[in-house]
Image 1: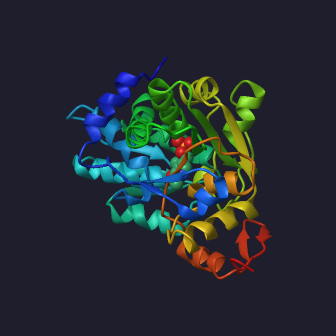
Image 2: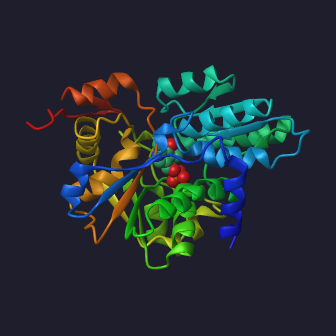
Length: 334
Ligand SMILES: *Cc1c(COP(=O)(O)O)cnc(C)c1O
């Protein structure tokens, strides 16, 4: 295997004091809905508001001192994480993103001193630009998910969750390129082989789910989603995260945009937490009955960097524009 439990323990040492130790908190409302204790690992408490700092710090820590700088493609949070990690080591960072990435995320990356390149309408096009920069300018690419150091960094979340709650029966992991799911599943199953680890994606443009169903990486059309952080392909030449997700995930379930909206409202109105759509798909899986809890259940609240204008519209029960479709509003509790 390209990533081992030992790599995850090494990552834990590399990120200590900078990106570890986020709280695992109970949700009374979700526990009632699940019929079992329901816990949330609050990666929104990270300095950049998302778990991706773990993987980026671990990857940057492994670079030689004379590295000329780093580059990546990103749906937003990885770019922010890499900008932060590069700044901490005094390295140049260039982040490539598609036009689908919300403005708030782009601004956050610039604020950390990184250079930003906006190119194309998909994560795959942004990836091409990042590869070009690596080729032409000698920058070192730190991929958002398909990288052993990044996967090991994200895996530290799994270790922390099982240390806090060894009795967890199920972990629900928001799933896009699968770096998070691969790391968490590897860590959790190494500690407790009986634990269930389920990936959750949005039903439109779920690249890992389509790839697992096909038995090999496939391309999917990228569409606007409330879970914008879950958009993008897994790469047709995926080397690590696909195989790990195939071997370690028990199942992948999909949730619809309306269900993500409802879960965002539950998290906000019941638990008073601001999070982006991608962070709430685990709640949606339970609230819709797509996953049945079989004991203590946990999910990862992966990020708190939504576009605040759409976030406040959703909470007010107003319609929101998602690309060329309109997602109807619904007032919470109405
Ligand atoms: C990147 C990201 C994910 C998905 O992680 P992958 O490793 O690509 O599967 C989920 N939620 C948020 C907020 C993210 O930024």
